[in-house]
Amino acid sequence: MIIKTTYIGTLNGVHGIWCGFKPDSAFITKEAPILYPDPEKKLRKKGEEELLDFVVLKNDDTQDNYEEVEEQKDAE
Amino acid sequence: MAGVMYLGNQMVSPAIIQGGEENPLFPIKDGVITKDVSNGINAVGVKEIGDSGLYSAFSVYDYSSSEADLGHYVTGTVSFPDLEKIGNLGMKSTFYGQYNIKKVELPKLKEIGLRGLAGAFNSDSVLEELEINLDSLENIGSYGLRGAFSHRSLNYLLFPSLKAENFTNESDDQFSGMLSYVSNCTVYFRSDMQQVIGSWSVVTSGLYGTNTTVIFWIPTKIKVNLAQENAVILANDKVFNNVIFGVGETVKYVVTDDSLNKNYLGTESGCVEDGQERAVSVDLNSLSYNKITVTTGVTRKTDVSASWEGIELPLVDEGSGVYSIYVNETVGEKIIFSIRKATNHGAGNLTITTSGSNIDETINVHIYTKFTRPNLTSNGEIGGSSFAVTATNNEADAYKAVDSSTSTYWEGPSMSEYLIYNPNPLCIYAFTIRYTTSSYKPTYISVKIGDGDWVSYSAPSSGSTLILIDREDSSSFNRDVAKEYRLRFEGRTTRVTDIAFMANEDLNDN
Image (cartoon, rainbow over all chains, first blue to last red; front, side):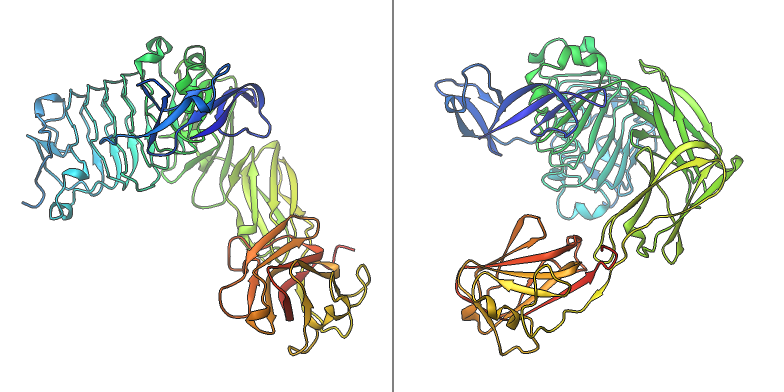
């Protein structure tokens, strides 16, 4: 799993969201750490059942609270 | 059974492909593919695809190896010019694995049902470019585009017509899996969508893609009617079917043709929102043009470019490093000519403001001359007026790696540095370094050009020659010039008999 930062702000007067990178001249108003699983895997919060494709880490939530499980591939 | 093939695991009832079942252009009737689709599909007249209507219809999963030769691999453009609605699972996995589809035209599609396009254009791991027109799309059902573009090179997705009122709850999963296995895609939503979906975690996490950009923009639309068939529109904004979808309230565009001597610089300001479309007409043959000529001394055309408002203009190569462009008679427009640096010349820029007349200008760039390394009989002086070398160890012998003999050598311990100096900056784009034997060849060599960073190279596993910095025929050869090049030898004691290099010299620097 990996944490990437999403940057929210404006660039040349246009509102935008940049996931995993920050354009040089963008004016950033908010940053959000996002936890992603490795390819072909999903995330699961320890002790819970639900499988997740990503987690927006808020407050005291950390990467340590999650584990990776193999993804079930389908025809989509 | 050439030309006719049964569908896969889901049979298609013609009754649910409403409006298209009798259309001779549509390649499915009564559950079979009825014509060669190797040149694409143009399904004129099909207005609706019902629930599971084209489920997996052209999926390569359903092709046997013998059937694959019957022309059922769809190539080029898939167009449903009249399609307005796709039902639940209507086009689920329809073109799964059909990676030769480059363009999808669904210009009137308003609604996608539950999993309506899920997996539809999944290339099954073949990374090929795809462009899709969803200009009229207003609503997406749950998982409607899940995996629709997986493994594709999808530069952008444009949603100029999605209605904010149709997106009220993130848990409806309308964007779930939309950019699965898609990287570096920019998704454009109307600015009023930001209030609704701008904070959804599915959006801030990148709509399931990698390095996604999401832009909320004013959906300016300019329809440019072209008088000439060979005319094309160039713009930094998105162009579909001669409609420019602008980001912001002013749209800049260029209309050009293949004659190279007609470029119309277009500007539309104060454009409207909410899907209204402004129409303008451009007749290239009715305009007068000015010729703007620049003399550069740079003979390779690919090193020279011209642009207006960030839009690259077609350049005419007049020969001998002279280039020109033609623009419609206009005053005050700024044309930027740029020359990128190369192994045999430096960089340069010139901004020319149009005056309504022809213009001739010169761009002064440093043109380099071929440099031949002299054979030294002593180290010389670093910082002096002639080629010189030195080293951090066995300094007095440094010149023996650049003398006329390959039997003499300079020896350095592991982690030793060797400095090459020339009073005029050099662009060295290839090194060949010879050693006494392979036993005295380093494991790694690093190169530092001027004040740049160290770049490390692995020594080849056999032989005593090591070429550093890619050769000139590579796309990544060195283009920098510097008076000093440092070589750092690592891994073992090194005995260098000769340091040869290919280089050009900037005689204009001093």
